[in-house]
Length: 361
Image (tube, rainbow, N blue to C red):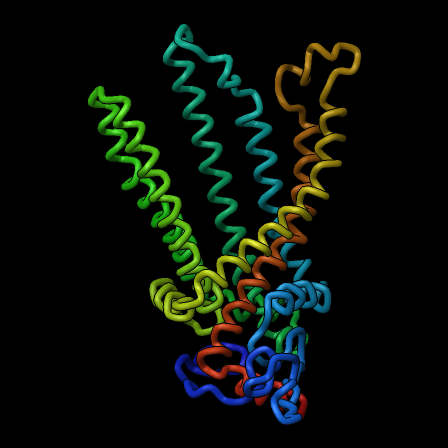
């Protein structure tokens, strides 16, 4: 048995039942519940944040926001802990390791090789530490928030302790999944750029640059395809108790035939999150700049020629607030897309309605 919201093993309920009738339409109808000859489709039950039927774009986005709003203590609590932890480490690493690095524009052919190597080692080392911390944070956030949304669909309360207890056994597999995806994308870009790089290295710069451009375009397209193909792997892993590879296969199966729709919804959610983050971060960035600039000597720019601690701390606080709001939305959209695909293909809505009814008894 898996841990999907209705307790339904993958593959049950393959025949599509008339539970909700697609987008709330009767057979052959054009409007909500409007069928031919006055036939009215029964309204789909809604025990939680979304109706239990195939969902529209607006319903998925609204459901993600509603899940964060109804279960704000758990959802925002989890996302705040993850965001604050990762941003604190990022701020410290930047302040102690990266903020005094020389500007790349200040390095030229006269700069000693040792300075180039020192800057590169510090930059890559700091970036690696921040990437590792971000990976750990993403694993915790994706696992726990997916579980929160799955309970919000059934209208059931969930605490952070319960979410942690139910998702903790899957964190290792989730970490493997979150490592596999960057490796796949990195391999795609390496394969796309390698031929052009070899041509440029051989001395044929013109053809090499063309090959690099063509390889980059092909790599971007293939990377986007992989992202969509495996975008539902995280909720499949958490809710069906599958391993990393099995969850990727499961995602590919659910996404098949709906890639453009899923891509559009994910991009729309990303745009909304970006807009929210911009609204939060821009004022904080302006405040940070004013606290970092010597007002008596504006030509001096940042104090000491680098970012001050006050600027880093203010930027870290604004990034924490932005991530605290964004994480439940992105995780919620992905989880609801997963459930929507299972409703459309496996009649998961029937099992969800049954589970919700049993929970009310």
